[in-house]
Length: 193
Image (cartoon, rainbow, N blue to C red; front, side):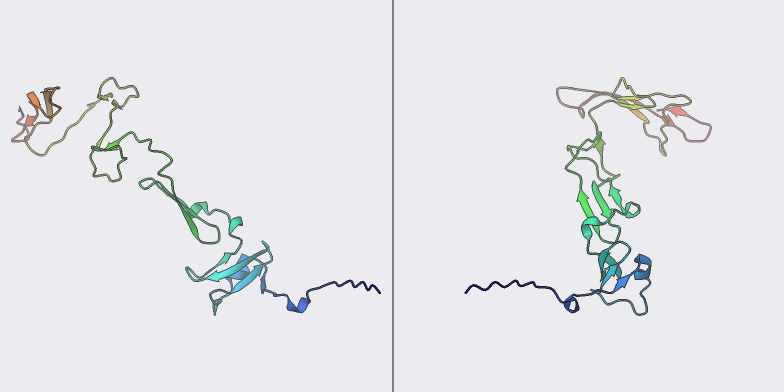
């Protein structure tokens, strides 16, 4: 004798976990006095997401992290460290180091091929520098009107030093120098150095 049974398993509705529900984020954030306990769960009808109450800043955070929007107003980029800090809509953040993407610097730290990281560092470039024009013809080319270059000093030292060096030894091997500056012992008295 052959007997055939068909069994259908059904989950009893009474055994399903039911979370408290909120209409929207405003209603969730209105739960105060007392605040929810850390780790409390809540279902939001407006966006169909489950939220957990966290203690880093006591706020609701969506458990649907993949669907969070970026919070552009609170995101930032640090041009010194080349780090992008991305803030997420419902809390949390992501930090991304972008320094490996490019080292396209025009100026470098003295004696290195590293970009400067502080305003006090000595810097150099191997290209020609133009101020007031975009096609410099010399190492430093300044163009303009009404006193193109101003050098202000607080003592009787040279404003400009014109130097001829021995190229076989290096830039610090002075052969001849011409110093140009003003020696002012009073307001109206001016002598060239």
